[in-house]
Image (cartoon, rainbow, N blue to C red; front, side, top):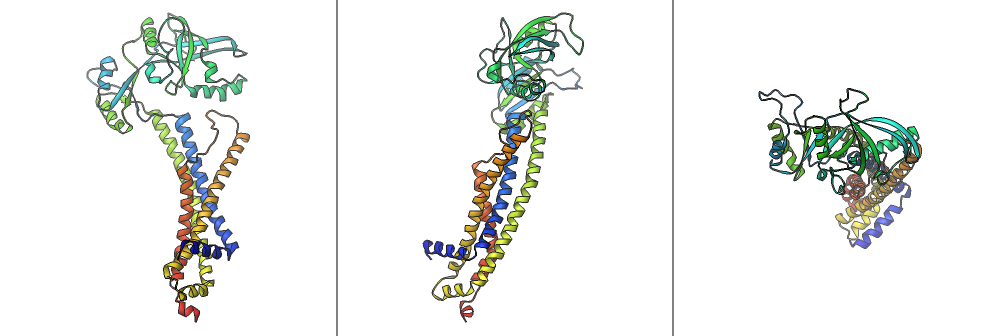
Length: 419
C-alpha cells in the first residue's frame, strides 16, 4: 500500500470515533506532560544546586593536612617541598596554594554605605590564594602598597542581598557596583575571642568576584597572607591547603589515592554535601516521574481498548480490504498507523502542556514566594532531549497499546467475516 493511501485511510479511521480519539489523546498528553514537568523540575533544581548554591568543579581536589597525626615523625605539613611533590603526581595539571591569615581580624564600618548610614562591626576570616586559582580578570589581585586587594564569593553577595539587606532595609548591591569599594580591616583584634598584643590597621578594596573565593570570608593574595602571618609571628611557611587541578575528571580518583598514601587528607565536604542533596533531588524527581509513567501506562490501556473496539466494529471493512487484495501487513500498518498518530499528537500536546504548566508555576513562584538566597529565575529546565523523549514516550505508549488490536486485526479470516 502506498504511503499516501495509508495516510488517507488512517485519517478516515480516526474520524470514525472522535470521542475515543480525544480521550486517547488526552490520556497520552496527561502522562507525557506530568512526566516532563517533574523531570524538568528536577533538572532545574539540580542545575541551580550545581551552578549557584554548591558549585563544584569536578577537576579540583583540595588537599589539607591531617586533622590527627599518629606518625612517629610528627605532623604531616604542606610546605613548598610537599606542594612540588603533589604537583608531580601523574594527571595533575596545576597546584594552587592556600594560606589562612592566622591572626584574628575585624572590620568596623561607620559611615555612608551606598546612600545609607551603616554602623557595624564584623569578625573577618581571611585566606590567601594564588591569583591564577581565581580565574581571569584578576589583574589587580596582587600584594603591594596601598589597600589590600580582596576577592569575594558571588554566593556571599547573594546571601547579603536576599537575607541581610532585605531584613535590615539596606541597599541591594551588584558585583559591578562593589568593585573598588574600600572598607577598614584591623588585624590582631577579635570581638569574640582573644586578640593579639599587636594590632595593624589596613584598608581592603574589592577587586573582583570568583566562585572559587571562600564563602565565609575574604580572599586575599597569597603573599599578603604570608606577610601578615610573618608580621604577627605566625606560621608563614606551611600552607593550610593546596588545590590540585586534574587534567581530566577521570584522573581524580587516582590522584586522591596518591594523596592519601602521602599522609594527607582530602577536604571534600562541599562535594559530598552537593552529592547528597543531588541524590535527594534525583530520588524525589524519580518518585514523582513514576506518576507520569503510570498515566502513560493507563493511556496505553485506553488506546488498546479503543482500537480493539474499532477493529471489532470494522471487521467487515477489513474483510473487504483483504478480499480486494490487501495483504496482512497492510491491515496491520493501518491499525498501527492510527495508534502512532494518537501517540505523536498526544506526545506533542504533552510537551506543550508541560511547558505551559512550568511557565505558570514559575509565574506563581515569582508572585507568591518571598525572595531568598539563590532563588532562580526558573525552577525548570527543558533541554532538547527532554522534548524528544516526551514525543518518544507518547509513541511508545501508543505502540504498546496497539499490539493486541494489531494481532486481532491480522488474525481475522476475511472469508469468514464476509460470510
